[in-house]
Length: 77
Length: 109
Image: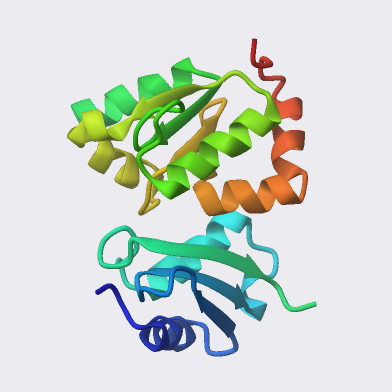
């Protein structure tokens, strides 16, 4: 079992307090998620930088414990 | 610079468009890699690929090389562009096509 969605959301919000986080369980198996993160902190940042901010919030779990997290990021409109 | 970093650097500098992936374009071994291949095929550009499953040193080394935790990874003219998610976001926004055009990469034959 990878990580529960609530824990993913909590980790992201701990690092990006203003973030709006939507998490979808893609396969219904608790192991393949899609996350959409909207935060003011992304303003002026490249897509790669925005994703890296989320990955660092997840504390190095990306690619290990968290294999399948499909991520999209956006700035508030 | 470690031997692995040197090898990666040569691959990245030596190819206009290179995708580090799991498996090959014909037989991708992971959903994210397969999506990255589909995106590049839709862009219609020539590209090289490296199957990281065949080379554990590169599989780990590429993550520190780009400070990016996952595979696949796309490089265009020596620059890290992103993983599968970013390729999709850029493709949907037309940014990936614009980048490939701007960098004047060869079309697929």
